[in-house]
Length: 274
Image (cartoon, rainbow, N blue to C red; front, side, top):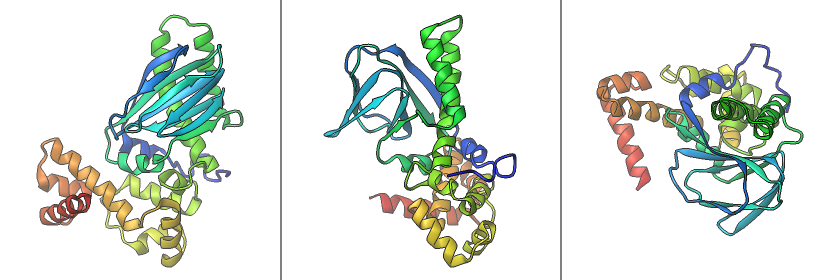
């Protein structure tokens, strides 16, 4: 899907990235000669495996997939999986992305199934960072680990851009950002979640009727606009409370009218999780 809102008119990802607060770390870069096992871990994490050269097999919960370079596989942190070498020249970069921001659940929900993505026809900027990583693995130089660490951060942004532009994921926030109308509303929500948002205001921002907006939002995002906004606001409130800022400040930061309203929202969320 083409992106008509580039050139500074609509930045679809900056506000979301600020709300995600991602931390990318690389824990393997180079040849993979034997099966690598990844035990299930934190659900607030993505595991990224970039196949730079050769062929790689993947196994998880009775499922199998094979990828040839260049390609990337993305698993949510709690899903145990294994990497299986399929060629003698296999080179991979394995990293993880931890999220410290309140928007983390909104993104992680989009990866409820593993993503196995060939990159041969990826967006140009994503291909360029893959080529940079491949060159560094082939000809490592001074500060190679530092370069690969920063390249991992760029890889994440390039991957998110690609997923939005190509609508690779069927549902979730990245699918919504691929829809120009929904993207305008989502960017506004991410930039100012504490604003007095109503369904009418969201639809007006998207430039469509309230009914059309509600339908398009649920189809693309898998949740209602109200549920999406509440999830983001509760994430903001929980982090304010965890930082010791108290319910009053948390309620104000998250857009709740009072501490009582925030307490009720937290109680509803806890009851729904039972």
